[in-house]
Length: 226
Image 1 (cartoon, helix red, strand yellow):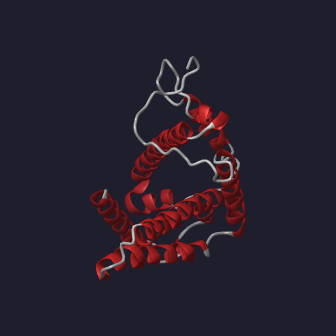
Image 2 (spheres, rainbow, N blue to C red; image 1 turned 120 degrees about the vertical axis):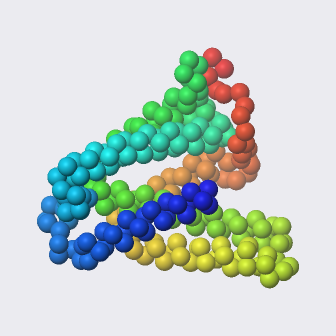
Image 3 (tube, helix red, strand yellow; image 1 turned 90 degrees about the vertical axis):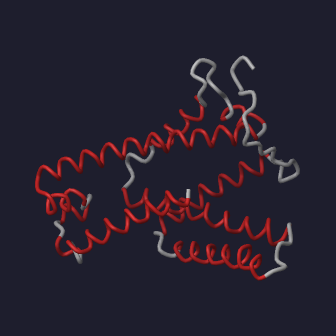
């Protein structure tokens, strides 16, 4: 995973450097590029019309592949959460189609929610996605502090303090700082979505009186017959 992140980061930095060299500021972009996407104009300036067509087609194919991967991963995550949950919500998301062996209801639900993004602007959707990512990153870092520093008491050496308190503390600080750059609209709707999740969690756990049964392994799926 670390190697993949380094390779992806290197590719991104290289592409960003060449793009910045060609367009040092936004004055070189047309109004259409600023309102929609600057990628076609950048491709045209670099390699002409043919390169613009090829790069746009590749970007479209990558978008489709990314959408399919996102829907598959989100559906799988909802399935695992539903299988570990209780009540009708758990049975709904934990259902596996007996023929295709896929989390059918989770896939349909994910696709239905995705349809709402059609009428939204790209900036708003990107900002809302960033809000969810920042929520996840913040709680991941807080979990490290709570689990390793508080519960397991792994704070006896400078190495443990740096690893279990300082590093995740820096991570929390950076994600909170990035929150300041999100739009007020995306923050408002993101907090509404986050609040809905908290309400569902309280309902499933009966106000934290019933522990969550978290199991990431394989077990018998829920089918209509079973």
